[in-house]
Length: 275
Ligand code: C2E
Ligand code: CA
Ligand code: CA
Ligand code: CA
Image (cartoon, rainbow, N blue to C red):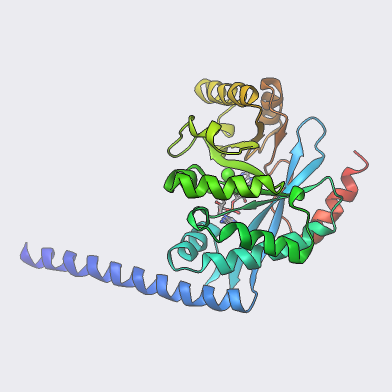
């Protein structure tokens, strides 16, 4: 009926208005949190699957707001990208993460997620080098995780930023490999060191033959291209055993450690020295 139709239209626009209001509230709260230095960083171990010993740690952003509660990075990172907050947020997060990494043994690296937006910004190289320079973290101890969407956005600028960071000794990982718009050809064009196999494949690897074959093919491809493979989202010993059997040597996931505060990282490193 006309009435119902009208009601639906109203409901629909109320939803959109609510959505926009919420995004704006989130944006304002996030801006305040960045200035007040309230966005935190946790670290998840990346381990040698043969020994369980951590070789590095991935920094993962965490934000708790008194009114909004815990907000997922899957929500606030895209918002920060859309609303022009990502550059200052990255500076704050990288500074915190690099400071923490300073107290780790020198053979443990820091892996940091770089937003796609920053891969089309020519100022990115300078900002990253300035932050780690100020903290005193050697470029060789920093790894940057990038995604294919970022690499695809503006290939020329992205390649240039990646090449320059790579030339400084920073290592580059392609994150979430196998999802999104994959372009295998791009693998040879960028100065890539590592490929991270997406959790979607790892979580099915012991249950689903196609997933096993896909992971096997990724490992073979990376072997041929001289790229290190890191499996994401390992939750069971069976998954770890299968990955090792397929020739994957590095991985991360809840089986080895959830994202943890810097203090726990130091405990874990100490404990792993006795493995
Ligand atoms: P990502 O880079 O793919 O990070 C892996 C996500 O999987 C993290 O979620 C991590 O907590 C989760 N994870 C790790 N191991 C397991 C596991 O065994 N099982 C399951 N179920 N999950 C696991 P998180 O921390 O919520 O981050 C979500 C995404 O937000 C990240 O995906 C990344 O794209 C983005 N992100 C997080 N921190 C940052 C940051 O500092 N900068 C940027 N640009 N993006 C970030
Ligand atoms: Ca990542
Ligand atoms: Ca990932
Ligand atoms: Ca992701």
